Figure (cartoon, rainbow, N blue to C red):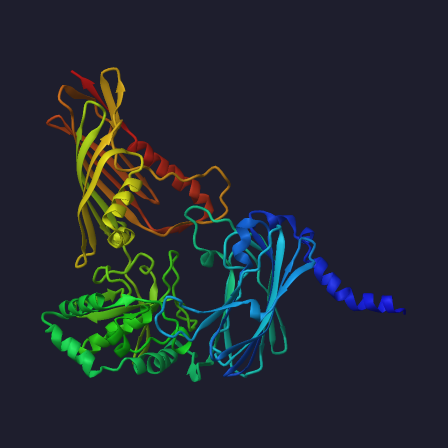
Length: 628
């Protein structure tokens, strides 16, 4: 064999690998709706002992167009107990040939929580490879070694819309003798293949098309299949723990993570004494909560044991800031100082409901709230906002469960379920129609429940910015003036109110000497498209009710010649009613739209759109007034 032939044989594996990443080798069905395609993904986990886990990660992603550039980022997390090595990154052209290489020195190294004034021990390496020609491929690999064995990442095809998967494989080699539980969640999107060889389990997905985001679809986490892992014994930042059941884990969580940072210092005792607490348990909790809100502000802090342990309550007391963990634990410690027990409650906060599996204990969740049991029922406290109402959970936290942690372990507790009428927009308006087609109006607005959440941002805006929000909200009207007054956040009852006074031009249209106008001027119907074939299920994650009472005063010299017919509609998605009454030459309009929370198969989407089109048609009912 000559030298050239031997050289070609040596290069052959690399040539084959490069050819595999030629864009021409992407199946056509994976290009549809895809801004990027994961060509190859491999994760090799080796659990060597209770405190030794190595992970080799490699991925090649083809960026199909400019819209996929965000998928080119390479992001690597590390901390003092997680070491990263052997980092390699390449950019390949459309033919699969390397055009540029990178190493660790090309990465930017930042703290994981850059807005924190504290030192943060969780850090991130990130790199954004750039190419001016599309398509291109980003290929990277690195190795991680950690003593934090509680984290074995879930395995799913992808975690974003607009990206497809050609092949992905995860290998879990368990040489530790520790039982690792698995939980498989199947969906129609892809089939998980599983094989076993000795201590190594192999999981893989192949040829999974991209999902395009659709109106009223669930979150990507809800849609993708996945397999989750949970070791029965683990180490987190040098502390060994037990995940054999929720209660064992809860006791570890409390005694290792919560209790050490919850000391009632003389300063905290003095804070409670100064409040001079009076009344029922609920009254005392409210007083302490108001004090905590007025004193603190939210700051992201990824520090402590793997980002799970709060900063000490004494530090929050001194500094006046913290993240959801720190502020919740500070509030819990204040309550303890007042002799009021509570649960540090870990939760999944998301639009789509995510609840903890009672049969699959695992370190997870993305938010923390507080639950206070009282003689009159549970009190729920969201501690990260200075504006949110007492005993109010945001719409992304209700209708699910939490891990309630206290000294006795974990209690899985259900959060409140809000009915649509508890998430209400209530409008009371008086409209004076003018002969020139305009109108003057005085209206009062009230928002509760989830609609309260959506309007809290008004209190972070300047006056002129609030005015702009109102103009955008009622963009279909032509304003000559608009004033928002008496904007209030009732934090006792969870209600936002304001008066909205406006002068509008060009509202009524002329037919000769007569005028006609829309029966519901404050509402521009939300229109959903049903022209394309639906791919994803329908999720109505936000139940609500809009209740409008509008009084129209007719201009002098006119009379109401025809009143639209009252109407009522009902469907599995909710209900709608609009009623018209004439009183002293004034038209009274009462309109109520109620939408229920629910998950439905994709075939129901057209039915929902049809229902909303009917309600919009009734909102657009025209009223005719005739010149005398």
